[in-house]
Amino acid sequence: MLLIVIIALLTIGVVMVYSSSYIWAEYKFNDAFYFLKRQLLFAGAGVVSMLIVMFIPYSTWKRYSKLILITCFILLIIVLIPGIGLVRGGAQSWIGVGAFSIQPSEFMKLGLIIFLASILSSKQKYITSFRKGFVPSLLLVFTAFGLIMLQPDLGTGMVLVLSCMVMIFVCGARLSHFIGLALLGVLGLVGLIASAPYRIDRITAFLNPWEDPLGDGFQIIQSLYAIGPGGLMGLGLGKSLQKYFYLPEPQNDFIFAIVAEELGFIGGSLVLFLFLLLLWRGIKISLEAPDLFGRLLGLGIVSMLAIQAMINISVVIGLIPVTGITLPFLSYGGSSLTLTLCSVGILLNISIYSKM
Image (tube, rainbow, N blue to C red):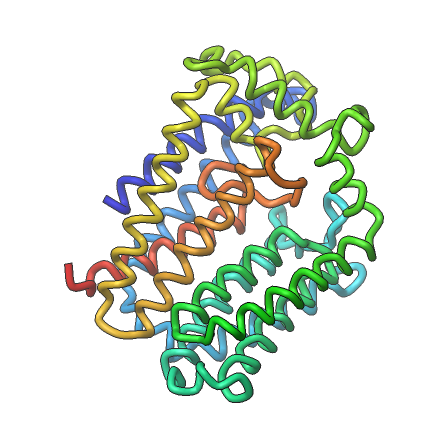
């Protein structure tokens, strides 16, 4: 069932990437199939990687977890070096590799989940101790978060932190420790927002996008203009109006708005239902894994996917400020899509060993 859900989401994603992007592709690259061809390439590479990873025993990742994490930290440092890291959308988050580019923060999300699952499963008895278990795990998570924020990329950082917090909580950390952490987190988030004027502008635009309809409020207004006319059945596949240079790069972060416009409430609900199925099946597989490492690794991966989808869709429908993260399996992307499918490959391998 998990594999069927992933293929369904990926298929919808490929179709909607083409439907939402061919106008932009024709205008920018004189090739209506530009984004579709690249997405098919990424999806194909991702599916092949997923199938390969699916047959690698998940315990293998525990043996190489330290090497994986060190590599991810090195990539996060390299991307910050001027002249090497590529700046897109105001964030220095990419490293160019030939005609393509990779996003180290995407590697870090998976790498940290693997390493944290390894450490927590080996030293679970210390997790209730604030000094020996809770603090060391937090230092690791927030070191990675700090490097990601230097890019800066708050959306990816939030997904990483929340996914790891789920793992630490499930492992048995005390609730009182989380309450104290939540208070510090709120203060830290306020500090991050106050330290960058563009984040304050995003909060203001979220509260009242019409104060600056051609500036910071533009994206969310155009997103809602796409969702509203979709109605129950949608305008029809390929018949979106907002993709005609109203909604900026609709094949990326705001692809769900085009889904809702063209496929309506029914199409949007189908996507949500598939993500809920993914969440349910992923949790079931994880809970029935034969050891603690498998349970934590599976829960970390499914939490990462669910949290990222929840944040993206919440932004698109105006529930939270714009964060700039993609919708798993649907949004156009290279390293993001490939790493997401590799993550699912690990989850599929855990399902082979689960007591189901």
